[in-house]
Length: 426
Image (cartoon, rainbow, N blue to C red; front, side):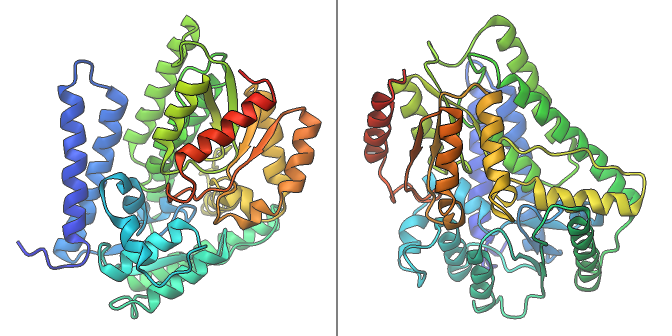
């Protein structure tokens, strides 16, 4: 079997590594059923990507927040060019490789890695591409970089154009964009959309988001039943990068909720003593494991909620074609993490922080100041005012969520230690 097709060798590596994780978990004294189910879904998805590359089947490049329910209903397999690169970051030399790429050093690590991945051929060339014009300008710059990369120049591309507001007319406009995307896919991928199939897919994703919401309710308990970032870390992958409508995603959230329920009833948490409850006001970084371990081990702190975990997905009415598209439009524009907080006015981000801080009994807010989220960093004044009103200490950092080298862990530890000490936390 040839391994010369772009991305194939790297995806073999991803597949084999995930399989090794599954084997290790199975052979452990107490196999974790949630992780077994999670990595099983990831492995299944990677195998689908490999099958598309090997056998020249349609393969769509896309992003979170682009209504992947539609792709699933059309029988189109999609992948995010940077998702696996980020997920496998600790096991590769991609960070060093991207340093040699012609991308500005002050740009978001995700964008740099995505440009690097296409340039060196560790991601496959797709049949077609769904681009994003939100939530940041760097996304648009990235798509232009891809279109100027060898092999990608002739890839048919469609960009969903988001409205600015959150009114019915804004969602109706974006529903029209989804219709245009469907027509694009039918023309360039050769698959037709069956709205009855779309209804089936959405009814399953409605269940998965309801189960996620139930799990989040248990994280309100004191002590929090699970470690930092757990729900969002798994949930982002299985809702945004695994084939939509997969019943396994529903099962994972239900398993998490059941385990959390039992721990809440027993008054148990992952820490010997939970001293500090933290709101992390951004996406989960790729260096979350050592960071969370440092917070928990050194300070007895648990990140009980973050923007990637806390996204109030709503039930989508599946009674008509129009209601489904309107529901998907709202889900894409106002519910998916980062897009929710970065598109439109600052009011959404501030309201989310106010609500999370109160509902989850947070002792402080950490705003990471991700280098790629300059829009959110421009809102720090509003954030400080909101935290003053809540009487909550606020720590603002400067990090790259996708490059752990940007701010070393020892620097973060010192900043956080000084912050906790200054505010008598813990």
